[in-house]
Length: 139
Ligand code: IDP
Ligand code: MG
Image (cartoon, rainbow, N blue to C red; front, side):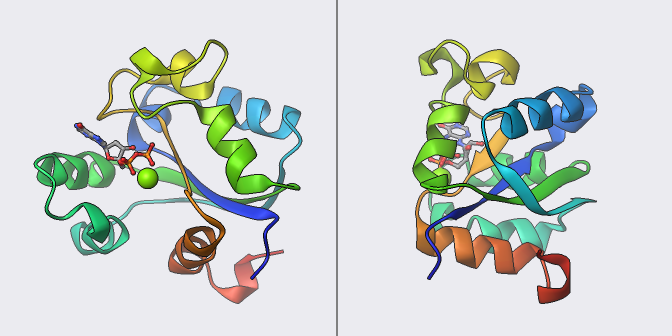
């Protein structure tokens, strides 16, 4: 399993607010190389599968509704220590707790609508990347 890649989504709120360019600039300026990327929209079934680990949580319905309401930018990013460094770059799940300068501090509205996704482990990065991209779409 490679340890130098992570998976991200710029969530529907980021796309709606016109923040794609600013967020991608911050990501690439922080040393991440984009090795896969597309604008796509998840179906309800896609979102339920992607977030299956949260299916028993009280916010699951709201999360699926949010993540399917419009297009997202999904991407695979490469950098040494990618998973950990990207989690640091995006900041805490709740933007109120996110450090200054992090993507969620800058662009997220709430714990639910929090602008970006970042994988939480190398194993999940590989699973999530493969969920969104075929081999021909990864470079
Ligand atoms: P993460 O995205 O920082 O890894 P997780 O706990 O894995 O956070 O939750 C996945 C996503 O579910 C969050 O990014 C957010 O969009 C949503 N979420 C998490 N906790 C809550 C909550 O308490 N209320 C509403 N939505 C939540
Ligand atoms: Mg998570």
